[in-house]
Image (cartoon, rainbow, N blue to C red; front, side, top):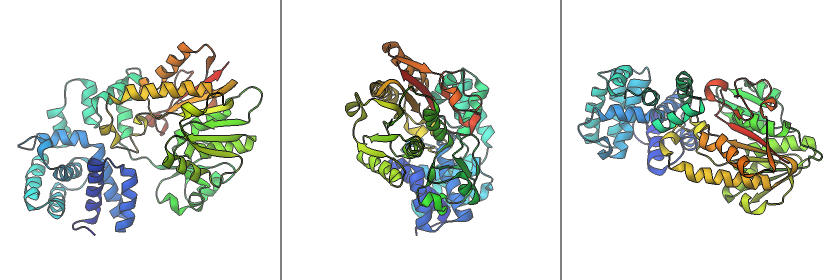
Length: 445
């Protein structure tokens, strides 16, 4: 085991993996906790320090920049990560200031060296001279959106795009940014024909808010539940469950035998579709371009009931004329709707990512329409509320295709409030406790 406090060492190693290797914290952290044998309070502390430091990175860096006698970006990256953990302890937790500074100094001494440890001590002592709100008053810009972005540690361009999607409502924007920084509970899905929600409730979960397949696990390891271990149930955000169920609930004319999941990796929606399709006697074709993700889909469907097939291929090339009855397109996107779960993503995404993704989304949606028969249904889904990836993609397609009409999706999320004025649907973390999933339903004439 590396030297130093085990919980803080794990948090440091997660930050190093994220900043140095572009790793994903939600993949790195569980393995490190198991490897180091951390459970209970130590595991909770490691998780809080890792995720909290990443969520707050932009704000903490702005504060640290005012406490360092040189540009922050010239410091060695490991030193910056120690400083971020120290800043989070001082400004984002209830850890006493003296303990926050001392533990960060010890972390630097154990992992970086004696000289950097002295720098960490000096910088964090300067940070500790003010509260978070006092620092905010000193460094925040006058623009109200940029101030909210700094206060809640989001890049300003993301905050501005969210404001557009929220029709310019600043109060709603702040609620969303706060929700993005809250640690989400684990939501489970009982896969139809394989598990019942009641089995998950008996294992300690509680019912989900909206989805009939959902159960929420407030604490503990999902893998300790037999249904999850056996893949009869899985971990899946309730928003993902809702949009998948809506695809199935909306009516199609005549036959209803052939379903298609165009971008199926890693397989959560495909597993739910397979169960629902089996109840209808429908066959599912799940297509995923990346072979390793296609294998994840195959694993998710291995014990699923009914007829299903997984193909590793480019959906835009193999599906023309497929004459499917229902098509689900969960399109590649920025993922800005899942910042609660992937806090590092907000610092990786750039506005320059959008044009390429938008072009791909439009291309895939056109292919989805080509793959559905007359009278069939296409669901366009993204885990992003950015208008460039949601309604404008749909509107662009409708302007160029006279054989497609949009269907009001709202009736197919029964009981879910505040989902917009239609015909499309936008879910939100601060309103629904889900990821910010977008859904539009299109019918081919």
